[in-house]
Length: 218
Image (tube, rainbow, N blue to C red; front, side, top):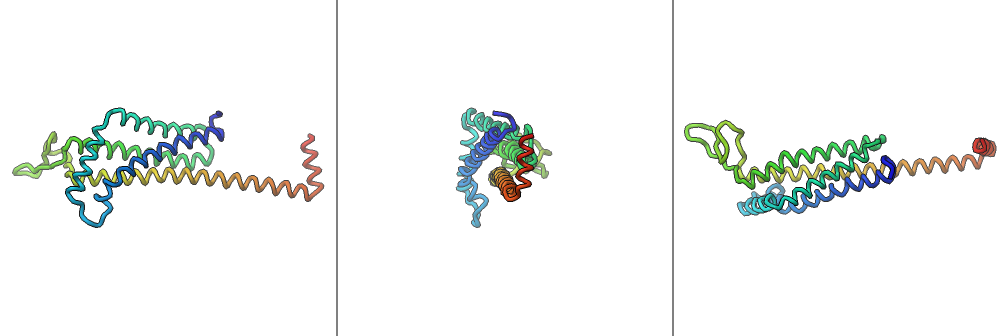
């Protein structure tokens, strides 16, 4: 397999699409917990928040091998981008470059919002208490003057919104990869059509046909 060749490009696309689809599947499995918090007209109930909190705590308490597998899959996606951008064509720079930007945006959302949110929810350190005779915020493990923590309900909503943002970013990666495939397919079809027209024009003009034959002999 030659780096930058058609086979390596197809294999690299496979390495990108599989992790992206894998992460979308994980987010889809979280959607039943996020839906009552963000996407219903009715006000979320205490049971909705409790169900979501229990699930996220269970998720965060999963064995370390789960997180390692997740990070390996993230690395596989980055490897796919590295292969496609090793000797980039104009199509690679446009579509794969934009896809890599979205992929890294998703990684930032994962690290900054989701991982941090899971830790906060698992620890339960999000119940602010006002200090007497002052407006400073105090909580378990926090001191007055620090950043005001969100309450439980707001923390769960922020985490659900982060899942939605991450899903949209990953869908954007899939759309760009599909757009690249379509653009390359149309380019191949146009090239084949031009070659057929040139061959047809050469057959219809004997002088052109002889000139082409002479060039081939040389």
